Image (tube, rainbow, N blue to C red; front, side, top):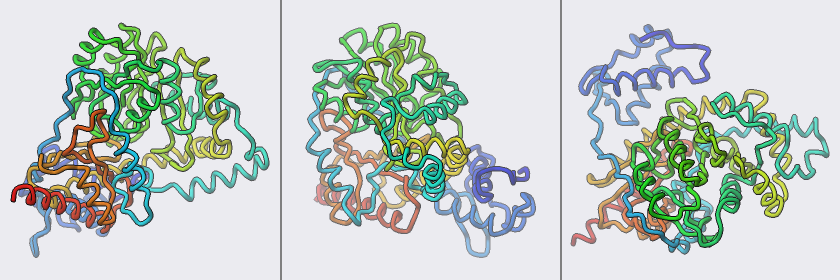
Length: 482
């Protein structure tokens, strides 16, 4: 292996870890192979022995290698948890009937003292607290009382300029004045839906899909139409084409890059074909792009917006998953619906917090945002591996688990004897939150599925929490089998 880069934003042990993972995943190191000694690899890579030891310990915690007394470290065969299946659903319109469970979930997961495996909060795996505080201090020193004023309806020009430049570096060209700053991505999606659809209309969604999307559709008196979704490739374009031919779909609302909860990532060709298909039928596409910055391979996929020729794509993004959830700053690229969205924004909330916008603009302009993402993504990837290994150790053998390409969540399919809503209640009693699968579909199916988040600093409490959930699931199977 070549010498590591001392100029990289990643820690040296993370670079060692990445090199070894590439060797294991690519077959260069096979199950049973012995890894180089700590001293030998340290000399080869020109790093310290503690750096190599930290990488080895990380691989061991993820289940990739095993330490044998007086013999060294060896590659182990990874547990064969089958890949969770994607959602399959005949194209029939559905009204959302899982709102009561959603309310119970959101009330429970925010209780003090709860281990938050139910909250998808990726940036909390590496909080940017000090960097953001320094940025806010600079803003307060420069802007003084202006920072406490109202922002323009469509957002601070400085933040919009930084966003436009950031998007341009990743393939999406949009004038700063076209960007609309919102109160998180949820308001962005609400504005987009209100701009393109009306009460009673049909909105196509993935299955399973983010519960907040279903709640939003129901709140606007619309109906959901589930589209078959592959756990590896995303929403089925053939199923979508059939649905567009058969139903009066007013809009599509998809996680165009990284799915929540499946964690699968679509490629550029898929997104390009998706845009071609919806524009052929003159149906708007609202893309939920809150996780697009968090692909584990370190790339930034082109948004569907980049392929639009008719202006029918509306892109919703946010800093909630990538910097500061408490700031509640999102953004919307409205395509040809800018005038309608601007009126709706003024009516809904008038503006979004100026101090937060100025701080995020400074955070981006300084280069700290890009540097932070370069550090955050490897940690999320590492946490994903850790949680997958912990599930394999602690959950019943027939558990099926997703293989996320980014983001911060795992989607688990449990034995059919496990009711995820009951498991959720039992977990809360143990001081742990998870999300039952029933709230990821309009009719509450996915009853034996759960979602767990690895978007937190890894700790012994996380390990113990996963072990507890696995034990509870096993007990439920045993009780139903008795």
